[in-house]
Structure formats: structure tokens, C-alpha cells
Length: 128
Image (cartoon, rainbow, N blue to C red):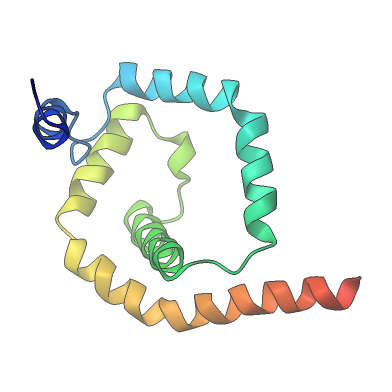
């Protein structure tokens, strides 16, 4: 009989690697999944808005903002949503080579994001 660790090791070997850009099929599946679960997602966002974000959440938020800044710079004014799936995939590949820059920018953005998160809760308390 397999142990839990053996089973988990097998699952991790077989799991999908998300470091690659998503295929068209996978994107469409994700779109349907988000549409199906939009009420649950909205409720989760509402609950999360009332709490102070964890350091991991703040770090991921900073990295996302850094990625968005680089995407904006690459697109030179165009919207990412106007691009085709192939073009978006191309941008994702270019961003994969800029992981160091993303981390560096995120580190600089982190204090401002922490401050905004605390201010969000402070403003909620004052408005009641």
C-alpha cells in the first residue's frame, strides 16, 4: 500500500506545469470556471476586504502590480484585453525572462501597498 507521501509525490509529478503560457483550450476552461463560480469569488473578495492582508498576499499583490507596469510599458498604450490570445502568450513569455526585474519593482512597491491596505481598514472603521 502506498503512503500519503508517495501518493503526493506521484501527483506532483503528473500535475500541470503553470510556468508555460496557457493554451487556448485552458483559457476557455478557466473562463467558464470563473463565470460559474463568480458568486463565490465575489463573496470571498468581500470577506477579504474586511481583513488585513497577509504578508504573502501583499507580496503577490506587489508582484502583480509590477507585472502590470511592465506589460503597460511593453504595450505602449494599447490594452492587453484588445490583444489576441497568441499575443498575450507572447507577452507572458517575454515577462518570464524578466523575473528579476519584477521582484525588484515589487520590493519597491511593497511599502506603499502595505500602507494602502492599512488605510483601507482605517477608512472602513471611520465610515461606520
